[in-house]
Length: 289
Image 1 (cartoon, rainbow, N blue to C red):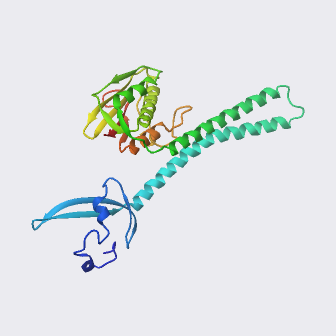
Image 2 (cartoon, helix red, strand yellow; image 1 turned 180 degrees about the vertical axis):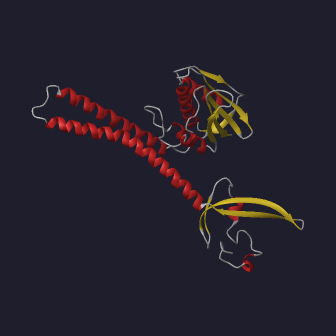
């Protein structure tokens, strides 16, 4: 009654279409719906169930207002992202400001010191280096924001896995191939996701002289591709998929975020966790057929 702003006697006996609830009966339960009712507007979770009463089949529809929960999650995500962005920007701007101030003080000296050319050259080099780092950071942001919709075609998993593995040259990648399987996906995007995962795995394994392995297996809904390393494991799981968060010198922090974005654009998932009973971590990329 509160949601539809009508008394119960006006609702009983009406069809779902008449009540404008038919979209809820056809909706995907895994994704929230944006709906406007006379009594409320927002994003709603939909759950459906069937039951029998007096021998007759009935369908139970449950709507949950997710707006406040989703807004809170979005707020937390934005706060985390802003912290990371602020940290990265400050890493470049603080030394630029400091060196610029030092150069200004240098040029005010009269007479100039005999080695002022060397000091100026060194300071300008620091400014150029930090400006380049900031430029790379912004390019990484643009790549993440401009990921195009996948152009799906039939692709062979083994071929894409091999191409990605061949591009990692810092250490040999062990290939543990599964059965031949083709899926409907954007081969270029899937390959990019695997390149990112293999790059991270190699960086984790190099300090420990561990191995990196990639393979796949057929599962009921499609294919599961794994990338395993023998590094020290995941130290900070909270920020794994936060764009631009990185603990690596010179890292952009978008590899995992971009890979997960690619997985989800295909209707799949990407998870990363420490291995059980073995050193290192394992990434699991699941893609539908």
